[in-house]
Image (cartoon, rainbow, N blue to C red; front, side, top):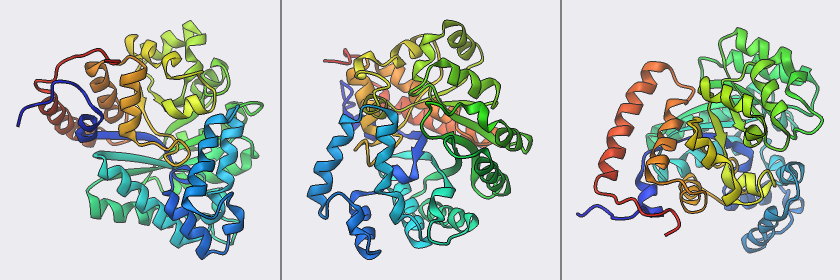
Length: 359
């Protein structure tokens, strides 16, 4: 069989991939959301009672005028994620969907505190999610890691409790601690002690920063919270000295292109700074953020940055490998996975021509 002469979406689908920034409560299957709402007697909480109606309404996500408006869409998913069965199912299906597009390694993140509204304890919530991910690992051969999120708009005491939970599960599937939620008015330094607790117990750290707020948010994430990776980091370009620091220290960015357009972090794909970041050797990774709300897959995100952000095939290959290089895995595991993935990518790319991304 002859190798393809140009890069296509179907070609990217065959590539081994890793995803580092994917929210559990933003990545349900639409069919599952509707089915769970019916089963739980919560259909009234949804904006429509049919798949067609939900699909039509979900297109309005594109008209959100801010990150906060985008985050408001979680009001439809979180209410159906209050039972162990629902949490296990959603985690399992997310990993299954990722595996079906050749995602070899997936880091899933969520805020456990959002799922105790109907009596579950935080440990029960976390056990259910991990059980779903482990089952998917057995069934589909994917590897997963779980990231627990504090929420910037809640008191630091809540972040502390989440960090404690993350520490307790450090050797049971949890790979990192994160801070998520609307940035405006909620700087990372307000959760300093939670990050110190997590870091002092050898947990990996990532922080949502520089998505809807300026580079000061990134600065705080790095120097107050000790972040090893930055979630989004779109506004990094506004501070040339900080950008140089990120380059010098090879701090990865978890870029989510479609989400960044939807939240108005950037005007459109073409104006996204990720091309500049890649050209300057920032360790960019590409991610979905929320598969349901952004109506996307990792394959689609990589295809879009090739088509609309100007990344050529070799740059795209580098970006794909970055996600493995900067995964929250132990070093030996990561190197073994990287060797296998790089060999497979080289095989798939053999004979592939280098057309213009917009051709």
